[in-house]
Image (cartoon, rainbow, N blue to C red; front, side, top):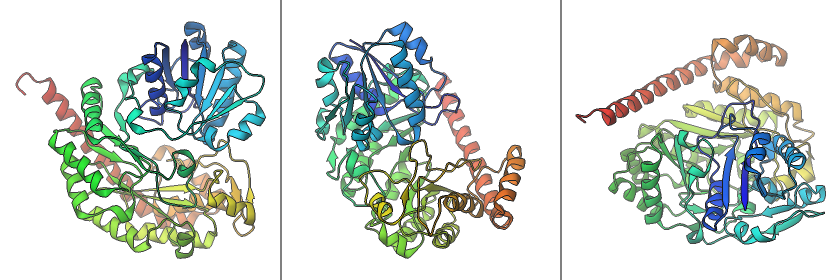
Length: 469
C-alpha cells in the first residue's frame, strides 16, 4: 500500500519546525518495514513542499494519514476537503486534537478513521482494516511499551536533508497534575522510559546521517522526572563525545540542581527554559504544578549563575486570573531579567481541570485555530475562553501589554509603524515606553548571541572542510 502522512499547516507562513514531524516519521518507518511505501510531508517543516494536488497525482496514495493540532485545524480541514475531491482513498486522523476531540470529530464524520492516543504500534496493526466508512470509526490506542517504538527514518520525510535539529525522546508521560496541561490525556501520567544506550546510539547515527544538524533536542513530556536517570544520559552523552549542543523541552524548576547544570555546561546548551506560568500567588497555587514560587526564583538565578541564557514561559488567562493579577506575572518576569519570555494565551483543552473551571465559571469560545503564543511582531489571536471578570478582548490586550512591558518582541524598524498603530489603538503608550529599555536589552543580547553562534558554526565547517584539520 502507498501511504501519505501529512502534517497540515498554512503554507503561506514560514516554517515553524526545524525537523519533520517525529510521530509521522515513526509511523512511516514502521509501515515501510512492513513492506508498504510511505512518505511524510510536514508543511510546518517545509511549507514549500509540493501541494497536495501534485502529491496525489504523482504518488496515488491508497491511504492518507493526517496529524491534527487544535491551532492548525483550518489547514487540516482544507487538506481533507482536497483529498476527498482528488481521491477515493480512506483518510485516518491522529495527533493531539484527534485524541482530545475524537468524539466531536466522529460526530462531524470528518474522516474514515480517528486514532485516539499514542498510535505508534496500533496504526500498522489497523492498516489492513482501514477503508472508507460511511461513519467515522474511532480507534483507541493503549500507551505502547517504548521498547517497541521504531527509530524514525527521517529520510522518508520531504526535505529532511535540511534538518538542523534532531528530536529524541528519552521517555513519555508526565506524573504531575498541572491543571492547564493536556499531556495526561495524550501520553498519560505513567512515565515510560526508553533504554538510554539505545537513545545514545540513535543520536550517534543521526549525527552521521544528517550533516546539517546543529542541535539535539530532548522532547520528553517531563525529561527530569527521574533526575538521576537524566544525569546518566548526560554522562553518556559526554562519554561518547557527542558534540551537538542540547535543547531541552519541559524543564521543571524544582528539578534543576548544580550537578545537572554542570553536566549540561560541559555538553553545551543554547538556553534553558522554565515554565513559570503565573507570578500571582493565588493563581499559581490554583494550577497545581507541585512547585513553589521559590523554586522558580531559585532555578532562574542558578541558570544565570552558570552562564546559561534564561528563557521563561508565562500563561495569560489561567483560571482565577484577572488583568490585575497578570501584572504580578509582569513584575516577576521583569525581576528575573530573562533573555526571552514566552507570553502564552491560555487554551482550554478538553480533559483538563482548567477547562472544567471555565465551564463552571466562564465561557468556552471558539477553540480552533487559536495560537497560544504572541508573535515576534505582536500578532495575536482571539482568546478561546473568558470570564465576566476577565473578558476575551482584555485577555488579548494583556498579552500585548505583557510583551511590551517586558520587551519580548522583535524590535525591528520595519515594524515600527505597525507597533505605533497597535499601541495607539490599545492606548498602550506607557507600556511601550516602560518596556523599551528591556526590549533594547533583549534584542541586542539576542543579536550578539546569534552572531556568536553563527561564527562558531562557520569555524566548525571550516575545520571540517580543511585537509589540515
